[in-house]
Image (cartoon, rainbow, N blue to C red):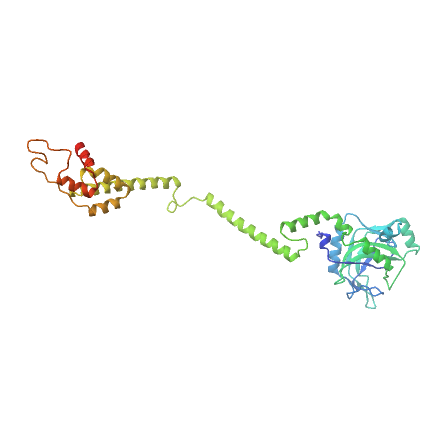
Length: 367
């Protein structure tokens, strides 16, 4: 199946009108094989027109996509009707074309090769005119590449009696100009119009690739290749994710979230327990060494639970206090003494600790 190219992407082409001898059969020659030229010097700018087996394959594929047959008219009236206002009746129709290799005559000259229409249907009027000799030549109209001369597309054909050279004659120049107007640059040929839906899809594809309509085939292919590479990478990542979802974790390397949370809780509890035991040891040793008084134990535990290092630093520099007792324990002989005042030993204890007499006596009375 041939791929249709949007009008903006059709390579610049020109229209050629030729003339070949014709008989009223079902097969007619459309283009000769190889290189050929008109007697007036056409084509200009290239060596010759060309139709080879390879070129013919493209012509045949393009013709096979047409839904309507090619028309054969009289004297190219299809091209001239807009100019002269006259109708353009058909002389015949054809749809199937094929390539035929030339045969060699006894004289050693190749004959009969080229592009042929094989299913021509003539109207009764045209057949009668051909059989009676009123028309003797077929003039095909085709587009060609102005850079190479290669035939690009069969457009239609006409019966005519204006031969220009052996077996092929040019139609009047006015017809060529009419053909140029008939196929204006912004108007696609008939078979391209029929497949314009595909052209629109091609334009949409180029837009999806981020390319302009004028992008070359190389640029489009590079964009598709890059897109495929990205798609392959995504597919690889999706496969890895799917494998991880279905895989059974190795218990030696992975643990569940619940297990991890339980372990964290256990570690936290054990850490708190060890910290508490360490604080108990520090406070007990300080009390025994006289670096803490019983009245300071609550304060010391509060500090140690928040910052054990600060408590330890304090105890390293705190003096050891060993209270002495008199027989009266600081009281007047025979009496209770003044319990609102501190003894000298008690004042010595309060001073480094920053305790007031009232605070110390309050703690002492509660003991």
